Image (cartoon, rainbow, N blue to C red; front, top):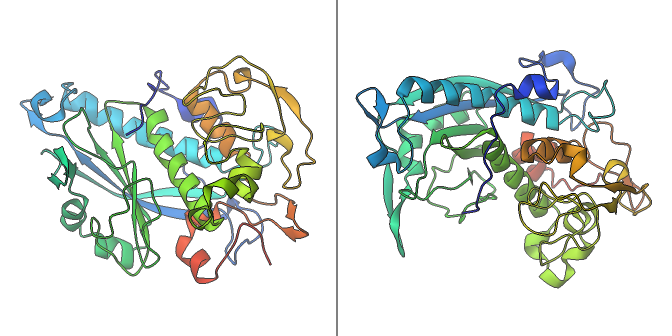
Length: 354
């Protein structure tokens, strides 16, 4: 499990990012992928608070013993902060285009709260048990939520503390598990529609929760781009990992492009979000053929803050009306693969449109 950076107290990330929550369904641009934007992502939130009196039980959580009231308020606040960050991140070049509209709209349909420990099950070869995601999904009747009410994501608030193994993201559906997990085909109910479970840790902040989505995005786009089926010594030639990110099999930035969640373009190691070193990068004018304008860039662009880096990076993902081409073909809005994974897989969609 990756080491994670503290959230640094972003208590008003929506305001800080200039995001208004509760976006109207009709605020999107022209239809893309046969659907008007923004694409809606219905969400169910699930919270597990093992309590002892009016406080969380540290003997269960491993490292959290705040009051139930404070922890409940923190998860509510951070849920909204994650929505704000993801919504803002889906505005293509939103940092320089005030008119840019989001590609994604998150809607919380239901919140469950359980004053109990996370269900767990043994993990082979590991003394620490694994969160029993199947048991949690059964408890909330996930089949009804996914197949009848269109839920695409479950946001699970829990704990880590060295006492449970968790997956930052976990997917199930007719097209398999493309997620930041061990991709066990049996750890979630497989339904007729795809859904993704994000497991947040309320000992951490909104940056760590948002990072779960960053890694899921990277895994999904890499899958669509064929990285799972490409020899590692050819990764540098791939559209996303090689040309957009600027990396190869080492996962480091070998030619400064747009970087990825752990590695901004100027990074020299994982989680290097505060590096003052300048590099020439085309992140703000990325073009698949490499002709985009390069400019000196360092952490001042995102204030050295992990969450601001995530939002800035997401805003450079080819989104709505990106106007980019690859080998003469227009690029797809890459947020489609998060918003409508099943539809994209059924149509055999690529990162570009044939």
